[in-house]
Amino acid sequence: MAGSASEYIQHHLQNLTYGNLPAGYERADGTVTTEAGWTLALSGKEASDMGFWAVHVDSLGWAVGLGVLFLFLFRLAAKRVTSDIPGGLQNFVEVMIEFVDNSVKETFHGRNKVIAPLALTIFCWVFLMNLMDLVPVDFLPQLFHMAGLDYMKVVPTTDVNVTLGMSLSVFALIIYYSLKVKGVGGFVGELTLHPFSSDNLFLKILLVPVNLLLEGVSLIAKPISLALRLFGNLYAGELIFILIALLPLWAQWTLSVPWAIFHILVITLQAFIFMMLTIVYLSMAHEDSH
Amino acid sequence: MNINLTIIGQAIAFFIFVVFCMKYVWPPIMAALQERQKKIADGLAASDRAARDLELAQEKSAQELREAKQQAATLIEQANKRANQIVEASKEDARKEGDKLIEQAKAEIEQERNQARNALRAEVAALAVAGAEKILETSVDASKNSEMLEKLAAEL
Image 1: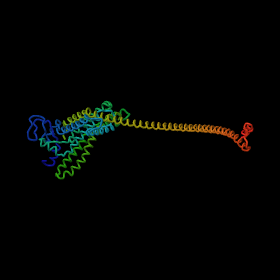
Image 2: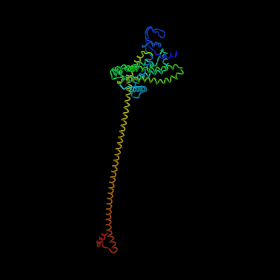
Image 3: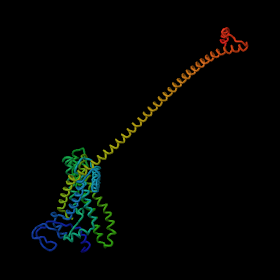
Image 4: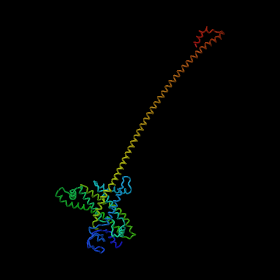
């Protein structure tokens, strides 16, 4: 923990970034790149200078690792599944699956083989990624620091790229199912003929831009709000853990323990909200009549 | 807060995980859940059926018991009737027998009385003759007075 408090915080909020630096770029350690190439960013400035062509290795690594852990556990249970008396792992997996299945059935009444597994994946995966927030903030970064990696953000959902990546995938599904169920005409009609409608054809055409603006905004707002809600909650939670870590060692537990306990609720709730909203958006995409 | 390729990486990972979950996790577990549901439903139906069977069997056994009781009652009644008949018949027999015995005894008594009378008659004649001899101090010729004696004996 070197440097001032703001440096400490900024260091903690910096992703381990692997990206493309242009030729002739002066790096943080003073060297100048001779040609463009992919490398690990040495500072926050380098990471942002890399622009779009960079990958947050830590976010993606932890996200994929946790996703694989989730699928490994559930696949293990699925392989040994029995309709007789289930074991411990199967019990747990069945509880999760029934919980998700009930949530889906309550909200979505159509026939779709994708939505329920999608919701299960979202809930478990987001929950596991959020759960990393409860690992003490300095623990894993310190370990990786000793291994030679300077930056390590272990909570993937505090990276807006991760949450956007998921919400944009959901958005793509919303568009896909809207087009599939309603057809191009139906979908365009939904965007342009509601909420304001008229029997007069001229007035109807006049109202199209207004409707398009309103419906377009509400459509675009879906993935953005989905991503930013999860990101904001987890980012704020992480930030508070970092702030608590700035306290003297003997005082930290007085704040970090209550906050961690409260955070158990937050991470579960946020995972649940992400899943529920996905189901709701997709069921709206399936509804033919407005 | 840099927006970069991570979005696409995450989206690809998301896609792969969802497809994996949809293909290899959800169907087998769902199938097992449904199979267990079916098993439980079957079990409940079987227990319902068993309960109904039990009720039927109880009803049947009660019915049979009732019939058996009725039969027993009829049998007892018949037996009683028969016993009464037998008693009546034997009473009748006994009375007849008794009457017959009385009749026989009467006949025997009559016969014996007749015999005794006859014997007495004979003896009376002899005694009368003997008494008369004593009175007369002479012998009476029985043959001469036989007619009179016979008359006497007949009067006895």
